[in-house]
Image (cartoon, rainbow, N blue to C red):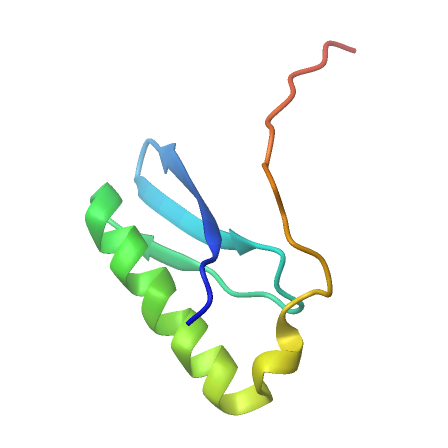
Length: 71
């Protein structure tokens, strides 16, 4: 079983979640953090069943960082 790092963002109208380190676009959404997480897990399973485990990139992601820049 693979572990996938998920980013969950909170917006005024709910939450969105997406995996880091997968090829393709996989997004989940929900009114709550937990709903978005469950939705993205379902989307990941569908993506894996459709495209196979080759969608995982060939590196082990150690961390995902968020940076803020001013311009």
